[in-house]
Length: 141
Image (tube, rainbow, N blue to C red; front, top):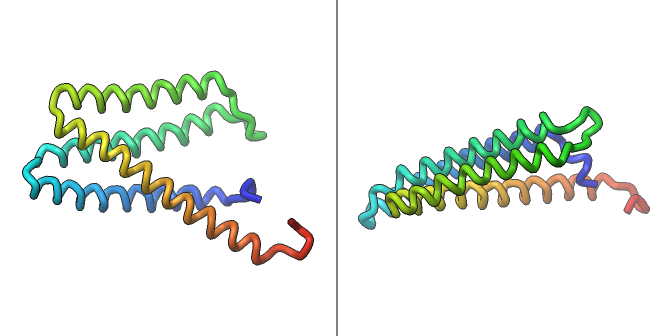
């Protein structure tokens, strides 16, 4: 049933995620700055930027390495996944070594984006499933 999930919903999930992650990141950065760690905020901005860029590159890679029939070429796609996640990890670990508060901000920004993406995707899938279940005929299970 979820194979019929509309593509325009995916773009809405990504947009809502980016907006929610920025809002949560700004609130968390403000609280942490009030607690005496102002360099956390630039790290948070870097982490959120990396997360959004990672997701956009993921979408373009999925399109580039898929055939019109929807079959994914696994080897080149896997290579792009390793490269993207390796860059994000290297930036986060590098900043943790160079400047610990900025590095933790990067890690927090990446985590906040992923958590909001998961929450938004779950809500959209549950709404879609509920709409599909209410329109199903008896015996279509």
